[in-house]
Image 1 (cartoon, rainbow, N blue to C red):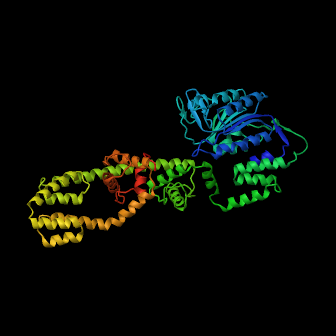
Image 2 (cartoon, rainbow, N blue to C red):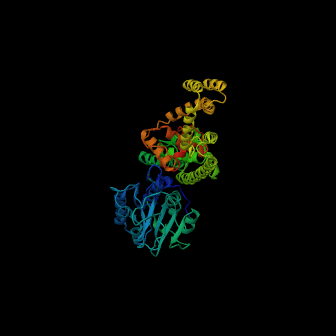
Length: 548
């Protein structure tokens, strides 16, 4: 048996043999910022390897509906044999319906129904059924999330396979490598080779089934074709598309003194020196938008990993957070994310966000029960000590408004009963409104009519003095978030949905809004300031209701 050659080497080998066969190859890989898959892109290697073997190949990459139809038409038109071999390689996203499965185009026309634009596998299977024992359908399924629309479900699922047709299925990367290598080895049993490559075998699957037979191969000429500059450039372009050791080494094997040999050697050295080169390139190919990166940072933050900001920039903090998360889920801690990992991270964050909301709800309910229990101990509207104790403990409590009103009535009555001199001293202290002025009043009137109120103001002023710097810092942090009016309104709407009564949803943070923010922070174990900071925004954004 002839030894296996790399797909790229097959393209460059010079072509001493020719096999009668036909193939259709479609690789759809670029479905969006979070849905770009290298495996589906690599089926181009299979197309070139088949051409080098002499197959008549109709191939298209990242195709819309029209391009897929054209490729299928060329494939059917060019079929010229009665015995095969015939191969169809399809990689990308699939959907299924009552009548079978479909390959999804990379873009839809005018947002029309997907059912009318996807490539039906039944059509391909009908063609392959004309080549019993020699017709092979190879599906490379990428984990792409698509909206199938009416009548369809995501994924290829199960479908009917005509008699005599072999179907091989697996991840797009595995399929691309298999179709470019093992599939094209002469007299190689197909089923064991597919199983060894990690593919699932369905339909006609005899253990002795061979796709490419030695007798199919006819020698062409007495020697290899000369390899000129065009072949050199074509090989280099394929190596750059691959951008991995596989492609660059294949180029050097055939063109050790080629025009791009120095560049290929440098790329191989860079790959060898970067332990996470493949992972980094995999993430780069996702072409994550800044908003997608922000979403990842929010997910990590919700899960307790410090990204040092939710700014859409993956710096040291974000990479460390990614590595820590990868370690926790027992995947290679490279610091770079794959699409399946992003989906897994997002799902975990959604679960944790729900847990945090439930914890906050339970904490809020416990505080409300304690609030009501304390209020129940107050002996009516004349219990000045009880009312002041309640407000000290629950300044934003459920009955704070009532407590303040009753205290106002008590203070009004006290003021009316106070002696003129007591009143004058109190008015003077209140006009100055300092700790010193109230202490002077208490020194002169330790049992004065306004002594409880003076003591309360002293506590409040001392508390304000202690928190003034924190409040100023919190105010600066909120200003630094640069929230626009819509973001502020959405924050108020979120607080209102939680029953925290932020007042009118108008984007203006008044005293009532500040009280709602403080209560939100308190029930979630955040720093209580009444101002928005990064952690508060993350928690408000936990279920994706608002965006900064």
